[in-house]
Image (cartoon, rainbow, N blue to C red):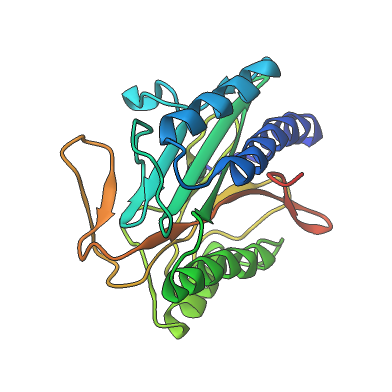
Length: 248
Ligand code: MG
Ligand code: MG
C-alpha cells in the first residue's frame, strides 16, 4: 500500500529534506582534488546532528556511514574512506536524514576539478532526466510515466539506465512502496495521488546498464567499469503539482 502523507507529515519531511539539501550544498563546496570521502562524511554527519536529526543511512542494514560516496564507475552505495578525490573524478554523494521520525533522501553527482567532456555530458543528462521525471509526478499520471520519461531521455542521449536499483516511496521509512524504476512503459503502474512522497533517483551509465557488487558487500559498480552518475530528489505530489522537498 502506498501511504499518503497529510500536511503535518509533509512538514516534517520538508525539514528532514531541507537538512539533506544543506548537506549537499556543503558537499559542493568541499569536493575538490585531495579531499577524502571520509572527510566529506564527517562534515555531513556533523551538519545533520546539529539539527538534532539523524543520518538515515548509518546502521541501515549495517551500512557504516552517513553518506554513500560513489566515485567514477561506482554507481551507488560506495563507503566513505581514506580515498582522496583526484582531478577528473566524478563523485556521487547520496544522503538521507531523519527528522522527527520522517526521512528525506537526495543525491547529486559532482565533478572533481576538470572532468572529461563525456563525463560532463553524463552528469548533465542524468540531472536533466531527473528534472523531466519530476515533471510527471503529478496527480492523475501513472507511476511509470516518470520511469518512461527518465529512460527515454537517457537512451536518446546514448546512455543507459540502471535496472537493478530503483527509486522508492519515502516517509516514516526510507524505503516505502512503490518502487520507482527508471525504465518502463508509460500509462502503467499505480495512479499518482496527492500526498504521495517519492524519492526519484535515476542512475545513469555511460556504457551498458549492467552492474555488479564489489566484495565489500556494498559498493555497486558498472560491469564495463565505465562511469556512472546518480541524482535524486524527494518529491511530494501536491495540488499544485510536484514539490521538490530536498531543495533549499
Ligand atoms: Mg538516496
Ligand atoms: Mg533513495
